[in-house]
Length: 501
Image (cartoon, rainbow, N blue to C red; front, side, top):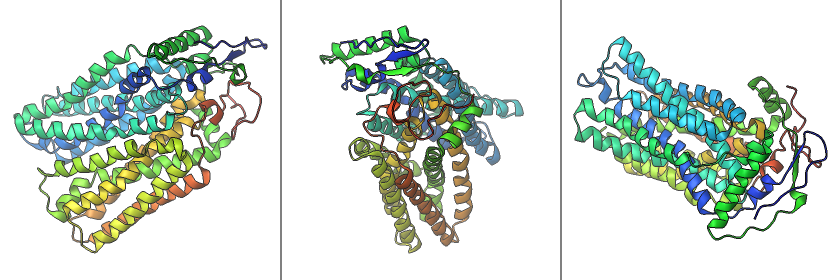
């Protein structure tokens, strides 16, 4: 049943019930299809990073590309750089052109980049440059996906379910890691060296092509449409969504007129104005979002990218067996968001974010002590990491949820992009720092202090969450951060003055 609102009295102002109509929807098959189609961004990223990490050793062999250690090391760096550039570039376009256009374009960019990687046919300077370009393009696509996908999901999911859905979607990164690990383990052993690594890089594009076809049937965010003055299009989109929900056997009650919001579309906000919005008008929220993103990124990159190195250096695990340990680690990371996700909507954002960050930091400190005492082996170390990251994964996923929902609609995708870029830059320090601490394994005390550093970083994130956290559970996005276009009277969130454009 549609819910119509009275026309706004002021010229150029739109009076709309669309945010309220979205938030009152029950869960339906439409929402399941939407999450399945959009949530693959994280699966693809986990898949790409895992595949790239698994095949780099093979790419040094003469039968493949015969790359040097430095050349293969740059592959991951170029991909991560592409993610940062893609997030910033496509993030702005997502706020300007719409969520649907961008989640189609970014997936296509990823398909092109990753697919072309398999066509690197030689190891001459030209082919090595071609390899880097294709990895950069694939990274751009995935980076752009983060901004467009999180914006679309949060704007289309009813407030009651937004936290758990966003956190579980982010957690599927580790499903991609498991898929990538199993796929490369099989392919690199079942095919000739020159063939197996190419097929491995095609796993993601094949999955992405199927998802691209499914995404064609998803609607634009009606929130984005109405905030950009496309009132008729927004009405058509919300009517379509409500029809899909009712078609599943649910009855929708009318929405009370008092829940309407008045909007006057504002000009597009560029990154210069966004900087003022984040750090002058929303300083506490900017510090909060940046802290959550930086701390989790540093810890994850530090542990994940040196995981195999630690197993081989300290526990003499053969490189051929390392993927089996990685699967156990990934399963723990995948389970956390799915088991704990609903608590972020029921217990609350602030308590759960602070709790998961602090608990994972404390557990890491305990594991550091056990490591230094030399009472762990490869199996118990993996179990310890799996338990730690069961909680850390839920916390890290909540960081993406947080930066998506605590800033106004008009800058949502760009805000995600900015904090993602900041996190990636700091996260890139993790592998470098921890790689040097590991060294040749002769001084484990160095890694002990490194683990305590990681623990302190996560505890710091939890303390900041406890102090600056926002109780966003069950609330409309417009109540958490009033849009700049909104003319609705009443209390406005921190820093609600309009930006100077």
